[in-house]
Length: 87
Image (cartoon, rainbow, N blue to C red):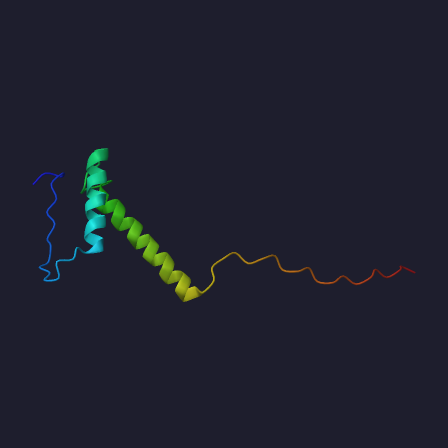
């Protein structure tokens, strides 16, 4: 098997419906091949896609765990006291 060959195992499905993720995977492989990109190995489709999925999943988990992660707005300045006259 070369780095451009892809073996995709398709589970037997009695419904005859195509899985949506299978269609997306095929599109990604076709695009990578058209771009001349390796499918496996450093800088390949699989490693790049895995990295993006993991980073996105971690971001979502952190947002859910910590709550709102948007930068806080500037705190209002406290009221100032009038200056006293020096005597």
